[in-house]
Length: 134
Image 1 (cartoon, one colour):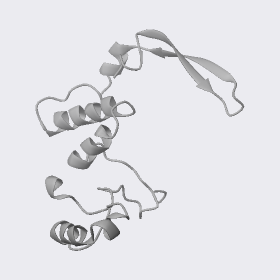
Image 2 (cartoon, one colour):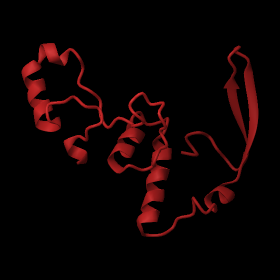
Image 3 (spheres, one colour):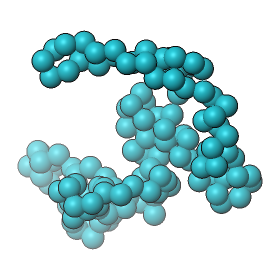
């Protein structure tokens, strides 16, 4: 992930464009040794805490450069834990799946109904767990 974003020890130039279209440059100092020696980052060993750390780092590595892989990883493992609040528009929950497209009901109603009945008790519920993650 660090290589992907060009992060290196020392001064890193970060570029932004503000709402008026003006380019902004910031210098962000980074030290790999300091980062990896933090208590929350340092590997806790071959145990549940160590696995959780690996999954968090995997999520971070996928975020913003691997399509939906970070979401799929989160959905499969539940790691990292997110604080969603009420702003998700879904009762404070992150959806577990996509709904079937609306045209599926008109072009493939019989199979859609069978799939929904077999997997989700007849409901196209975005919060229901798919068979592969149950």
